[in-house]
View (cartoon, rainbow, N blue to C red):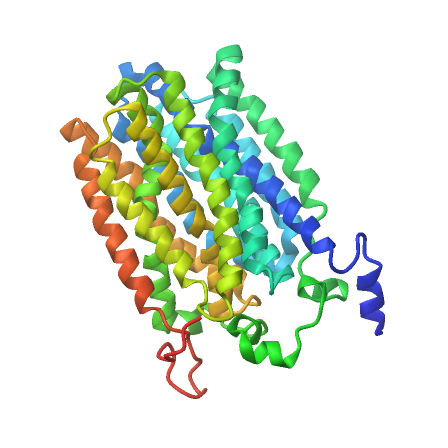
Length: 443
């Protein structure tokens, strides 16, 4: 046994188990970030709209802040990936959450619409981009190969539970303190929880002298599974962006998220105001969507690992997109508590299945060494499209009084996702056998 392996064997809970500690830490970080940033937003949306309606705020204009938040988090993604490779996940997450905490506190001081756009729409996503998705997902993906789908999806159930807990937690704090002080309490909780978790992050198993999954990858396994074979491949963003699979991947990931992101921002208001189903029921539907998505994340990760040897991860992603397509049609017919509950459950299950599998699939295609920067660039385009969802739905509602036309637009975006996923093939570097992006083998 080498000195590095000895070090890995004695490291905290051991070579195998520390990977699951990384998963737990990533879970807590994602839970805290999503509960504060996204999960609570539908409830704060209602409070802000009520407080500032006399100043001309509308669903569309307020939704623009949510769209800006998602868009700027994507814009800052490449920077977050660049910094991750230089300062490591621990330092990046700490710096990011401090910025996010300050931003949330400043949101509580909002008195003009542009204040909200600057604090919630620009400053908060800058901090969250450094603390949330790229450092956690990349780190977990590096620690696992055989169980990568399960590990990433399990970590990302934290974000799903954040959507479940965020609305009732925000409602309780607002009822007791008012929306301004509720945001201040959220700021303190976020900073304390995430910094405590960040202290346990380690860049990769190799950095502490061990292996992904706690065991070396043998040659026979490397030839059988494409994700093993590509683990050590290094693609620069420039090289990857010259291949067609990365562009197809972006649209495949982004198109169906138009509907998902829109519902995360509008479901509460839709149920409470448009369908007149009651405030408590509307909160419950947001939580139902997030809760079922937690189970979907786990199921998607487990099934994708099981299918990896023979079919790859695509079947899970097909299921995810098809489910959102069904919800885009169902959304135009929702008119009761039963149909809205069905809508929330199916949307949560199917979109949840794909959430953890998409970044895992990116590692299968281009290897895990290049994931930080590449995930940032991929997220920039795909999240930009997804970020249009809340604004599209809000603006359509402002002009038509319903979401029907918005669901039709979302349906078209979902079909584009499905087509692009079908066209993805495994990329090959120029100079290797075959041309880049045209290898018929598909993971």
